[in-house]
Length: 254
Image 1 (cartoon, rainbow, N blue to C red):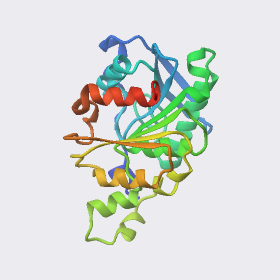
Image 2: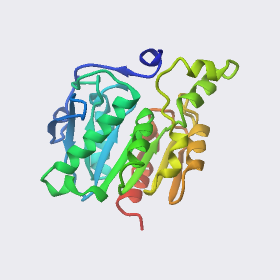
Image 3: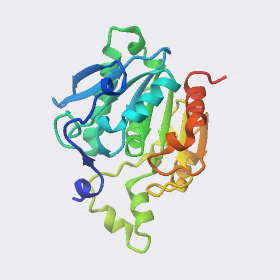
């Protein structure tokens, strides 16, 4: 199988912590239902809303610090950012089913917290970027949430393969992958308010694929297209407007 060559690009260890960028945080370790120990960070915010963040397929949580600082400053929600199995300080090796178990474990950990700002299930937002968007969709069909935000999402591994290799038999290529991440067959079961964010210059996942996934979703839903943004710089190119859209959707919807 080609998953570890083409889907997952984890980096072990951490190169920085939130403390080094001026954020108070809590180191967190928790266990999955299949016995792996995962690592994450809790950063408390000023708003009574919690974001459970599912990052993309490369690096680890220490590579999201710039985004984390801006999210904390501009949105103000509490954030739980964790590493999947095999990433950062988390045990194990990544797989599709494994990432879904990791997401469930992270959500169960949040619910188990005695602190009020982390324990209220309806006030949790599922936020997934790229591969993490597929993880967020899977969790969202299992549990209710305040909202779901999918940034730079794709419909499925098959759609990505077809986009990358349009002249090759996609069925044969997809059969070489164990992972499917078929969000397109699940998204219509998400009942929480949904926002899809995409850059119109995304060179990894074209905006047309994000729009395709969005079109399959049920209302209430919003599509936010960021002019000039590529795959990993949506929050930088979007700037203040990006964070205002983010905040309005999860905190001030009226």
